[in-house]
Amino acid sequence: MKTPLALTLLIALCFAQPTAVRAAGKYFEITYPRPAQAKAGELSLGVTYTLWLPEGVQKVRGIIVHQHGCGEGACKGGATAAYDLHWQALAAKWDCALLGPSYHQSEKDNCRLWCDPRNGSHKTFLRALDEFAAKSGRAELARAPWCLWGHSGGGFWASLMQTMYPERIVAIWFRSGTAFATWEKGEIPKPEIPAAAYGIPIMLNPGAKENGDTRFSGAWTGSLAMFKWYRANGAPAGFAPDPRTAHECGDSRYLAIPFFDACLALRLPAKGAVEQKLKPMDQEEGFYATLLGDSFNGPIKMDARPRVNFKHMNWLPTEAVGKAWVQYVKTGATEDTTPPPAPFNLRVAAKPGGAELTWDAAADFESGLAGFVIERDGQELARLPEKPVGRFGRALFQPMSYHDTPEKPKDGALPAMRFVDTTAKLGAKHVYRVIAINSVGLKSTPVSSP
Image (cartoon, rainbow, N blue to C red; front, side, top):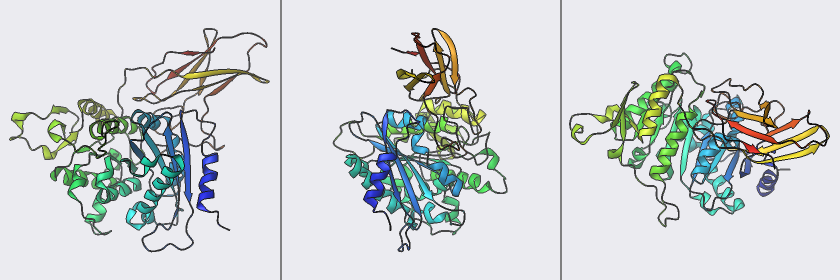
């Protein structure tokens, strides 16, 4: 017997928030099982959506969608996207929700059953937003605008969504994927690109090692072709090749998050505004850089406009993003000179195995969260994690997967902000301090135990 959707949702709400990740917010989850027989135009695969809402938000102003790519491994990787502390920092800054879809695609399934939204995934996506709006009591989720981040097949999905719902999209980040070349070759039905789609800020971000690769060269050539076409049509588009990587996401988040941050600032209506329509982009205020170069040319000059064809150049939303772009296309990384925010809500409890410390922390907006230093009575006691891991990108407290999502350990639990001092003396009054460290090694001010 199938579980009714309402009961499925209720069960998900009860168990969605893991105790492992201490973040100020609430998690909601909806699962739509694979239908026994899908109707034409409806999604034929199952999908699970996980939504994170920041604590204290009066009104949700947007939704950041972190969409995984094709294949069973990518789908499983997408299951942790909403638990990512770094992406949560961006969402919290702008009173946005963070949404991580995870399609139930097996290796034998054709990815285009979902990554072409015209096969029904767009309807299921909108249905989920309606469900989240009703169950969370946040009616605005059903109509809030979207920032779309897509890797590989996720970029394929996002490129078609921008032809279908351009008025709903704040900006798009295409990591090694777009459907543009595929529809230009006639491999899928070519969509009509509305004029509004050319008003959406976009960034094409292939890995430089994809160029000429036997398997992933299409990600490079397709991204470059889309950039050139969209710039020729006046779109605010940038091209940011990652010199370190092939198809994996690497450290792209350190440019993607500032890019979205700038676009949200430029496009979201003011808080409390009656008119909730996205602000149009004013490219007269844009910044430009040479395609496939690594020098930032700064803002467009009035006296240069008649002489320079800016439609052959990268468009960048702000000077800060332009400077970060220069660093990224040269090295695959960005700089940061500011310390992370301090941990908070430190609690110490006596346990049979020792003194248990638990705390909360937000990720550094610019550089993420690499870990913590635990001190006892003014002396360093331990580091968490003891040995940071960074198989894909920088070593972080939540180690990153190939898919720019937190790696899920074999035991299924994401890293906990918890430490047990097994050497604490019974009955002794110790003063503990916890210090956050960001991914460039900068330390926060400490939080002390009561």
